[in-house]
Image 1 (cartoon, rainbow, N blue to C red):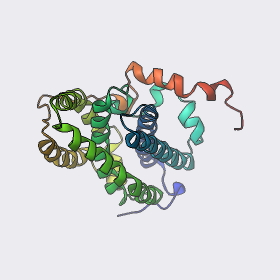
Image 2 (cartoon, rainbow, N blue to C red):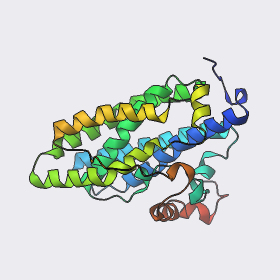
Image 3 (cartoon, rainbow, N blue to C red):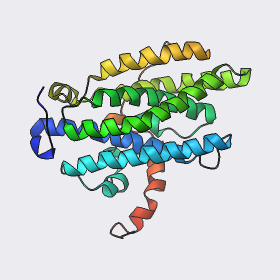
Image 4 (tube, rainbow, N blue to C red):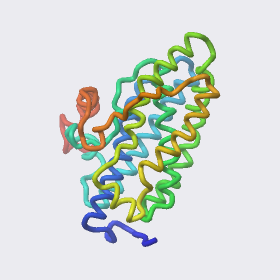
Length: 261
């Protein structure tokens, strides 16, 4: 497999495919990190409060690292990419965009995302784009703790009480189609896979299902058999919640974009 050592080694449609891939990684982490940060001071127990704050910090920090890779590829600097783009420029999946919901909703969303991200990072450690492979190896060290946390909550709440089961199952039913949207095909996918930057979305989805389904069986939960993927996020078509989130997240930056903090 041909490897690409740095930004100068990629060009043309191969570069476009790489940029599209990294935007998806960065925007997912940034938006979900913002959603998770809202739990600071509000989580059901102190341990969960601290954990969610740490998760949010990790996800936003990882987004910055991806935006830095994009900057090396000729895109704007990380702050501009995070705070100055319009809603249609974001490539995050709808799963990350949805409002916070209750603790069951947050738990199921995080679990769905962590399984996806764990398998995504495992594949990216073998990426032909060397800087991305190096970053994936580093991020995996943090991700394993995210995965442990969300698995623990799914296992704990899935069949603990009638109410916890009902809330968790309702969250699964509401979020499953959005989770499938994480694997939305893009026009750049074939080029990215052929170049060795990533694996096919269908392969990731198969690995995701193979982990999620046994975990649900253990936790007393079931996947909705008729769930349809919620697509659009990877091409910039988002629900209104994202504009509301961006208005809040970008407010201070847009007051004085040239300020040095």
